[in-house]
Amino acid sequence: MPKILIIGACGQIGTELTHKLREKYGVDNVIASDIRKLNNDVVNDGIFEVINALDFNQIESIIEKYHVDEVYLMAALLSATAEKNPAFAWDLNMNSLFHVLNLAKAKKIKKIFWPSSIAVFGPTTPKNQTPQYTVMEPSTVYGISKQCGERWCEYYHNIYGVDVRSIRYPGLISWSTPPGGGTTDYAVDIYYKALSDGKYECFLKEDTRMPMMYMDDAIRATIGIMEAPADQIKIHSSYNLSAMDFTPKEIADEIKKHIPDFEITYNPDFRQKIADSWPSSIDDTSAREDWGWKHEFGLENMTRDMLEHLKDA
Ligand code: SER
Image (cartoon, rainbow, N blue to C red; front, side):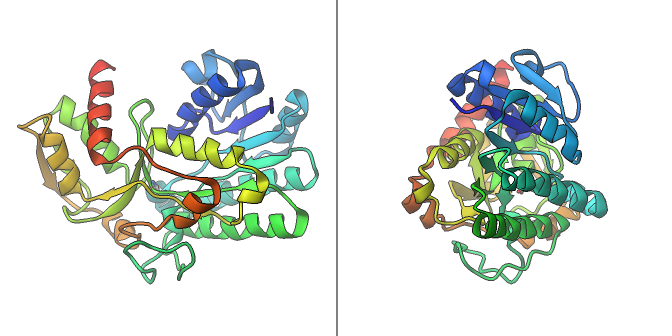
């Protein structure tokens, strides 16, 4: 069993990833960490350490303390928050990655998972079925940091033999932990508001199509790429990954099948421009062919599952 460290374990992805990894590898083999010690399952149900992802020495000492083999680096500022704090977003998103890459280069860890995003694409990228290899001119701080991160991952693999694996997440939708600061996050808020208020004001236009994925699929992809034999991983920057794509109007129509009186209104803000610069749909043939990626959730079964879980919560 590998010893695993998750940095950013209390975030939207980190929380569910921690649960799944503990279930799979055993509570004693998974070390969750975050910048703050909250009172939640991630902290209370297993090993937890406070780690500032920008503090190399702190990461190194936890890796030595627990003899960590693999690191999942989930700490980051997302797109909308990064636009408000560009210098800090660059610092956090880049330097946390360098710390972990350098620990792998020094052979203190064996394997890294680092998430990239559809934000690596930009306004000049082909919008529909965006290919793995294409024009990439990201126009957001977040996208620039992810694009540079991808280049560094590939560099560390090619030059130093670092085993780093990455996927370009689409917008991620989940019920257990609220997201923070993303442009795709309307697709999470809408479910909460549909149940609590029966209406939702969307910060994007009704026809803004974006690639999306349910968290269950995202976690399977994450663990799937990490468990794949090394010779199946042919792309060392980051893999396109896809499950579904929809517009605010289409998700609202799906919710109306369960909550007929649900109403949506549109009041686009600065996030519209970010969304407009991203793909509408993604071609993820390489992930499917190289390491067997397959999604399970589309808009219909995701909506059913989201509403059921949120009703019970
Ligand atoms: N979901 C992210 C965001 O909207 C994209 O990776 O920022």
